[in-house]
Length: 329
Image (tube, rainbow, N blue to C red; front, top):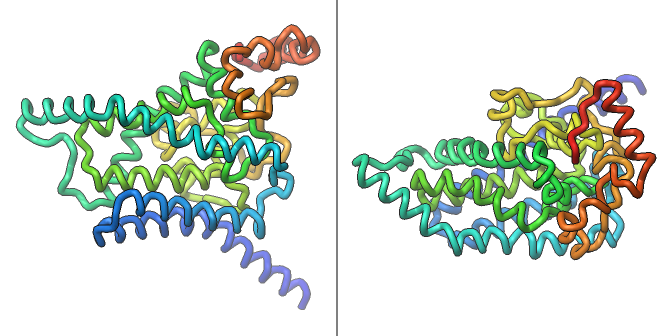
């Protein structure tokens, strides 16, 4: 009787594990489509859907965590809250204010000369969103991969890889300069194609919701969605402390470009250990918001293979000698 009860409980947990990702992802999306159809204010739609999803995720992180060790201390949470309130808002607003009109004008110019709209406005809004997240991810993938593989710009992205705990608010930790360009690389493509406001709104909802899910500390398995979207299963390995593992899964929303270009990575051991994320051992990374903004300008004193840390540097040389490739960052 006890064995039967245990099997039933395990089956129930398995169903829950595989149900959480699609439920938390698609319910806000279809809610957004309904709200747009109802004529609700754009800002109210994005803010209410994003905040509602965040609150649900925070609740689920508390009652059903992937790792209890990923619950941050206050000093970590405080820094990430500043990133949420400043870094995640100001750079996109600045990019829109300075460059949106230019690329929208380019879209209009192209449409006038070819005689038709480049964007499929007649499609159902859901399919316009799917197209937008694939096209936007093309630009994001190019820059994201460059951020990992070009030593000169890696320090700007290292800020996002510095958390030792993955949880929903950690998704906002990033350098403002990086956010300005990663946001821009997505939007330039969509604006130039003349995307309409409703499709852009749905794109924003998807990016916000999936971005929170990627980094959340909820026990869930994504199954078949690991071949479609940039899921938490995939993105946790992108945050691996092992550089060859983290140089993978570059997609922000979908996994199409990673599959096409051979950078998708998901080992059989899908579940990542709680202490396997962050920057390589020996990295001296500041925990304050201001300190993290200064990281790209003080990288020689932060990087794990700096001269001030000869043991970490020795490990790096040994890894290269054994044939394990470690980029210069």
